[in-house]
Length: 388
Ligand SMILES: *Cc1c(COP(=O)(O)O)cnc(C)c1O
Ligand code: SF4
Image (cartoon, rainbow, N blue to C red):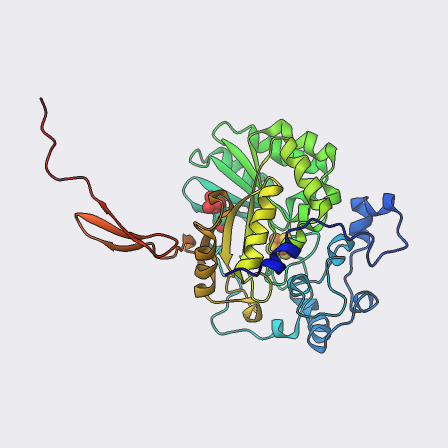
């Protein structure tokens, strides 16, 4: 079921520096500020490095008022120079297909805007909130579920009211878990981030804080020892990273994740199932195995949200189920993410699983295992066991 040669190629950790920047000194390369300043954000800068297809060239020209293009040099080095089908290219280089909206697509596919008690704070589930602290990222993913506000070039802007959000959390004792997201919170300076985390941790009913970030993958240079030393003062702290393809786990990324793990931060990964990027078992198997080697537990595999202009990146639910089938039982249980669909319009994350329950009656459940073999498990007997 898996292509062993391709798996062997995908599973290795590589460094691609300096790649398209042969003239840069190592000290410069390792400076995250240099990486941010030298991001690729124009057609001319991109064409200077790689050969673009017509679909990409038009996509870039038309993306300016929807979701900006921006690619860190580190991530750019993962891009294949000549192949428009390259799984890294498809994630961060706009294509003309983005300008076409499927009628089922939505501006706010997860219905977040209607669940904000305070601008920037999404309170959908009873005991936890999503706190959108910024609209900027190190690079922009073409399928971003929050592309309506992220990158700052679209029609809508994110107007987070920090003080009102903190006050809401202070007077809402049922919230015990705060997820910082955006945009990417790790783009903030250590000082600014510390102000937010320490304020949250000073609220007695908030049991823990977590951060959703793609910075370890787009900009591993940002994961400095100083950042880790600051973060570890606020345990328990969890970080959810976002990796879609095994090639994204480079040597530098593995080292950055190692620094976070050594600081005691618990890490999970969220992937989005994307057509032509990671919609096959071999790629997913290499991805989840590399994540475990980086001390990151696969957390969620998302069916791609119905974001406008994403139809060329979406794949079928059957494909997602086939991938989970191809992992469960065949590999380490820790390696298997939960496949979810965010209910369009605001249903929240809904788990979807291959059907391992064949039949369930009052008396027994009939199951099938990963090899397709059948088993029955009797329900507890209605007749009480005799006592002495
Ligand atoms: C994803 C999400 C969360 C966190 O969900 P978990 O399943 O606990 O990781 C919280 N709030 C919102 C609005 C979310 O979209
Ligand atoms: S890093 Fe996250 S928030 Fe930023 S563009 Fe990608 S998916 Fe969107």
